[in-house]
Amino acid sequence: MTLLRYEDLSITLPGTARPVLDGIGLTVGAGEAVALVGESGSGKSVTARAALGLFPEGARTTGRVRVDGTDLVGADAASLRRVRTATAAMIYQDPRAAINPVRRVGDFLTESLRLVHGWTRDRARGRAAELLDAVGLPDPVRHLDQYPHELSGGMLQRVVIAAALTAEPRLLLCDEPTTALDVSTQAEILAVLGRLRRERGLGLLLITHDIELAASVTDRIYVMYAGRIVETAPVGDLFTTPRHPYTAGLLGSSPPLDAKAPERLVPIPGAPMGLLESAPGCAFAPRCRFAEPGRCDQAPPPLSDHGPARVACHLAGELTLTPHRDRPGDHHPHRNQEVR
Ligand SMILES: Nc1ncnc2c1ncn2[C@@H]1O[C@H](COP(=O)(O)OP(=O)(O)OP(=O)(O)O)[C@@H](O)[C@H]1O
Picture 1 (cartoon, rainbow, N blue to C red):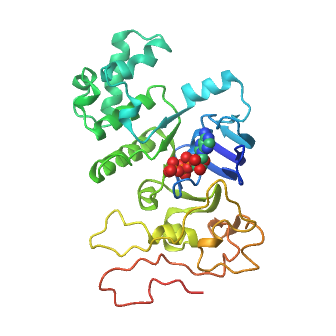
Picture 2: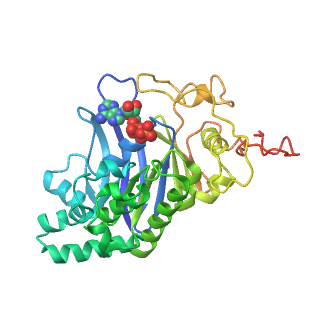
Picture 3: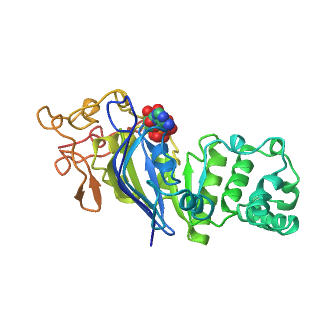
């Protein structure tokens, strides 16, 4: 069952040369984990916030964002409240920014249960302790009486995830949930999210700039560039057979999570297109080593089917791409190079 569905969502801010989001189509099913990946400024957070009906001030919005069937574009206040309090919850990058530093963890976790749902203090504390246990904190009852500064960043992010679960949402939106954490804590938080997804059948939308991290917890990846989806495919397929040069570039410039030996990473040349720039053709063409004048710079490429993937590239189907990441001592100098 589809929990979250974007249908041709476009958002344009006043005074800009191109839309922030341009024809986004994306789905997340119950129990499915999906990642939205791209460089800074590609529109990932604007996309995620739209799933809570949060659209930039003054923006022109067209298309639909359906959460459990309710379209949030132009939704009334009651529908928005229902989605935000019961169906979907968001987890942000910095747990310390999400928690009031002068209130105890227990107060943070029980507030909505007591105020919104009218639970007694003891019932709400019992539920909060259960949730802290569910996110793997070792001593739930003691943590309820602690202040945020007494917990590590990883423990606090677990508290934030527990808080997101209080209303038993069916959809979890995670915007760079591990970026503020060290690498080992990052892996623990991802494991918690993966377990919650399996145990509770949650739909998970993970927003990240890190394609390797995305692959470690999700089934399907959407790659975003300059406000558009440029490729989407099941994780395994995307890694073995990237079909868009931008996807191959992201893979070639990201260190593997389980790297045993240092890798020589190859950055994508140039910079992403800002909101004050536009291009008549493919937005990635100015950075693309394969771009063909007269072909790639004429019209934006539509997303079209290529095997299990959907790809927006005029040259898709003609390119065979592998991430051009070199390992030191690699004796196959051509192994990692794109061929045509
Ligand atoms: N409320 C807003 N008003 C004006 N511009 C905005 C607003 N929200 C986002 N933008 C702009 O829209 C573009 C996309 O922003 P968004 O935060 O979605 O990118 P992102 O892919 O999440 O990148 P990052 O990882 O850096 O957050 C950026 O150029 C950003 O400055």
